[in-house]
Image 1: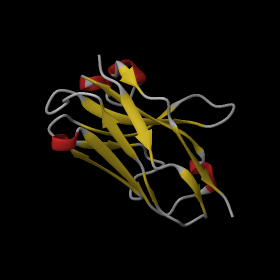
Image 2: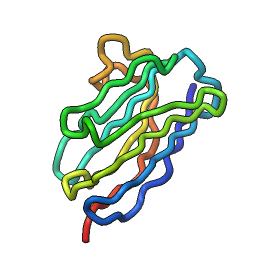
Image 3: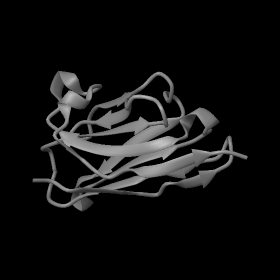
Length: 124
């Protein structure tokens, strides 16, 4: 069992930056891909970004490509999505997820564990 805890959410103005963090309860080094998904009120949860267990491959939704960068520190069992040039449409509850993913890296079906989420609000 892997427990995930997200942090770093908050209120930021449009054009601002925010770095989220997700810490796993046990060692995930080279084992699990780590993904981030988000869900806005009234909408389905959608893929945002993911990074493979080794950190060698990164994946991004078209809506965040060029603005978000995902990294991981396996020694600390932590993954960091750095978000820049934030837009009001980025407002959502952001979830960290862990799993073997494979070819399902863009889908929730690729992940077995997820956290409670951290709220990101982009507003002036």
